[in-house]
Amino acid sequence: MEFCPKCGAVLIQKRKKYGCARCNYAAKEKIKISTSEKIERKEEVGIVLGKDMQILPIVKEKCKKCGNEDAFFWTVQTRSGDEAETKFFKCTKCEFTWREYR
Image (cartoon, rainbow, N blue to C red; front, side, top):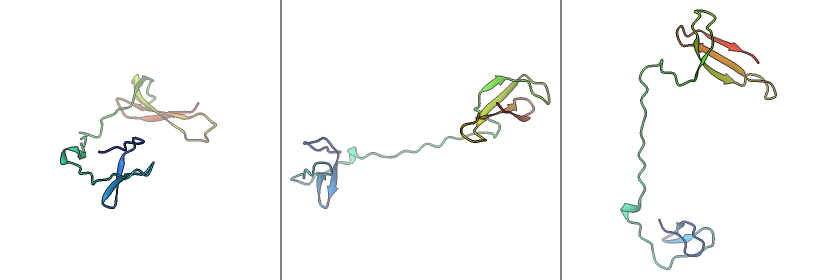
């Protein structure tokens, strides 16, 4: 990657030569970019095993169905923006879901 000697911006290819888009500097000779300077994009894919994997925080909230003391929770803005959000809970044992309005 080459940079403009005047303003420091990245030089872009203009026809056969390179130049600066910011200050209109034009390189006098053609710039060759070596293969070691090219950036290769490597993508990694994460694998989730099992659909029961939860990444939600756990709080002490008693389940209304089985009496378990732990539940996952998350919040959603279900009404207009000037009203409080709705808090949802899901039991860690029986997976019963309920909500609490504020």
